[in-house]
View 1: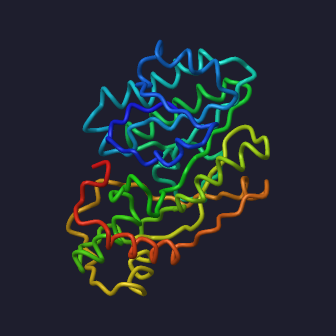
View 2: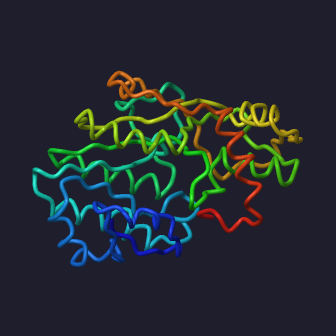
Length: 274
């Protein structure tokens, strides 16, 4: 495993006892430093990235270097025998009225989504490659993202007890972080190739509030005097990956209860990419 430990985390320290686990401090933007490690890998899962539109907008140079150029340069150094399973994003669908499948024309609304789409195009030139277009992820993790939709709404419902809701009918597809990890293992086990949407539940912002309210009472006000900077609005089908035998295991209610429990341990909002 390569990591530059940008967030100063040691969440994988418990794995050091395993003989098959190894870790090195390497910045993935340095292609010369990465290249020797690539030769030793049968499967590459490039997770290093600046994730989310706000973070990429705040760091446009680093976002382009890490999310786009570093990955494309890495692909050039792979042999045709090496498998790449890469997370991309359903943000590429942007704003679509119909049900989005892997064949739907992309409509990226941010530099983050544009980089993901361009990187995916380069990835698919490699014979053994899988792009997992991930829905908005939710759930507890060692390095939390409080800025993600479900995580954010649950946090504000619990801590603020009230908030203003813009574009309440905008739709989003979400997936639990555990099911994301399972999707990578599934892609490897089933020898998948190509693009697969990975989601679990489709909801509107309003239906998310109603789901949270069942477990933690709070108040929200639907407003139309302003708009959410995030204009994504789509429904995504994950039928393709389900037809290969993949089935998400964690539903929205279970995830909300998990978050409410986990948030008792968090006392600040340093967890996030915004």
